[in-house]
Length: 418
Ligand code: C2E
Ligand code: CA
Ligand code: CA
Image 1 (cartoon, protein in one colour):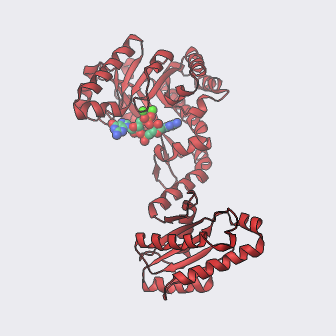
Image 2: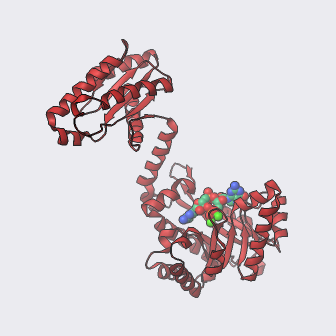
Image 3: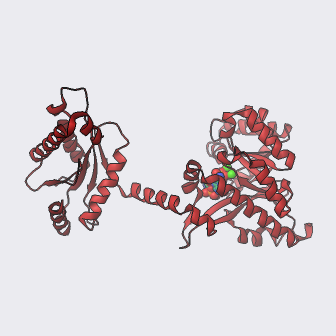
């Protein structure tokens, strides 16, 4: 191993190119158990001989520990590397030592193609392990190439999971707001709270990068409640300064919605800040309705009894169903950005008719409509013609910090209203 990394370091200095592969046996510890240590040792010797017979003169390899092998090959083309490694792995898989049993030995492999920016043997080998880890997921002899994109994503996810608690403590999750414009009056009709994670170093991380992860690890419930509280605090300040408030929407994750004390927790929160619950709109996703419509409806009605408004987010983005409108007593429907894109881009008749009919239907049911993703004057005209009640999108404003929102949309307009 020491000799391997010394030789690799020399090659890296000379910028000779080629690749490094980390090669591993799937479930090696079971092989030890099933075939015994002696057979397993023989297998390792067999791998050594196979590697020797396949490597060229300037190529070399080592065994690190157990069943971990590193290879250096002069090949730099992905296809050729793949071919060579598959040949090697297939030969090892077919070895005679265990041919008497039905066991099919499988190997997997992580490859780094050497570019001039790989500084040391150490980093190259670590990167090959990253690729090896990625290839573990597939159940065939498998070759996986390290790529920086995968690595950057992994690093980000790792950062997110290890820093989320501290970030919540240190108030790194910030309240951003995007206005909803009343299409009849052209005035501010509400706003949506959207989270931004601004790290201590000033880097902004966007929700699409961490919300899906938080939904998996359960942290989303905490964050959503925190955001709801920030909205209450904000509305309180707003009212204390004598401005007429508008309803603010908060996104609620599925996990949170089904938590036992959910309704109570929210009610206590608005009471604490003395905010009328009608100023808080809870945005939920269609997916919630897939599971248990009855239970969902009960929750919705409990929340409405407390005064909260319920909005169905991203309608039309998934397998939307009109049953949702029939079965759930929602107050607001948000038409997904995709709707508007379809209607305006293709100038096709059908999506327009559908959108029009949905808007008409919601009107009859007493549900108000918000069109998302309004980006141009034409978009606005279109949704006005369709009869939507509110518009939200970059045409009016991107999501901006709570402070900017206050100076742009609140302090200059609505004092006289209160
Ligand atoms: P969403 O609820 O559908 O929010 C709207 C997203 O569309 C926002 O992205 C917003 O910046 C973006 N957007 C608004 N207007 C336009 C437009 O005219 N054109 C285009 N192209 N995009 C527009 P953002 O802020 O990155 O949020 C992404 C998603 O993350 C949200 O989608 C929401 O599902 C989720 N999210 C954000 N904050 C929270 C939160 O506090 N809790 C939970 N559970 N989810 C959140
Ligand atoms: Ca939303
Ligand atoms: Ca949405």
